[in-house]
Amino acid sequence: MSYSNEQKFKFFEETIMNPREVILKYSLTEKASSQAMLNKYTFVVSPKVNRTQVKNAIEQHFDNVEVDKVNILNRKGKSKSSRMRGMRTGGRTSSTKRAIVTLSKGSIDLV
Image (tube, rainbow, N blue to C red; front, side, top):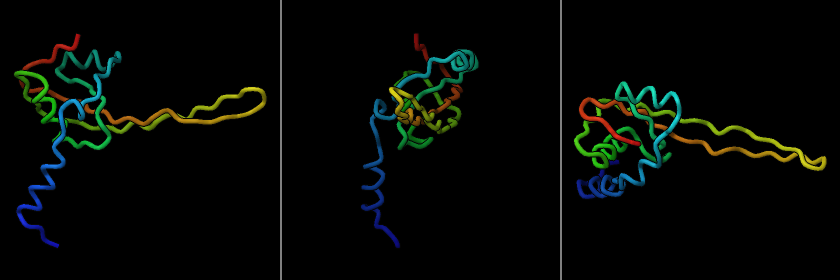
């Protein structure tokens, strides 16, 4: 199945996202804070994005920053259960996708 150039361009045009839709929040954990000294920053990102979209969003959102590499990890939500009045109920916390971004130039001031 082959696509014309117009169809290919239309597909890629639809996948371009606003940087605020890609980067949901910065991960403020002890490990992420220690990694920031090594120019590695951890962000919670949208589950639909890939490495290229994360790289472009970081470079657009923050000034004078060049991304060297992006590592993506999917964190599975935990199972939770509770008992109340003899009944057992179960649930899950939501799964998240995180991106660890290594910068080659510049730094990000998140405080």
